[in-house]
Image (cartoon, rainbow, N blue to C red):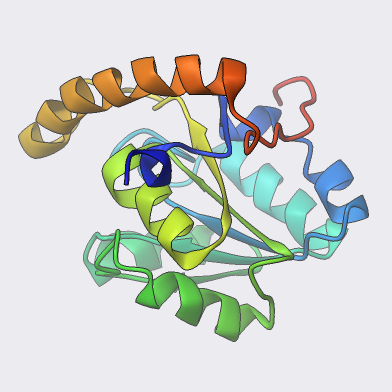
Length: 181
């Protein structure tokens, strides 16, 4: 179970991942968490997120926002960006809605990547669904609901194990990086 909590890669920000190279590698679908992955918790889409989604759309990616939030939060963000679908109250880490997202996008586990900021919901669910998982550092980690803040302390322990595993593990799959936009 411990390895199912480890992401395939851990990077500083969603915005440093080189999605152009991922597209060249054959990836066609991206599933994102929203809060603290794309924008601070509860924030609307900012200029950076709006430009980022336009870029992904122009590259040809299909995108789904997968969130445990209620519909108004996810829908509002989705309406502010180009080319994204959404699934709200996703029940992460259960893999069912990761699979539904891929079905809706017409992608599969071989050509879909997941990006999120939490281990116990985002990464664990993506790994259970068989999707390549990328953990990003949360944008504003201590401006969240209390249950998320508590989980962050436990996640720090898991990340300690991940860093050791990353040094010796064979399943670490670094994503290509670029300069942050």
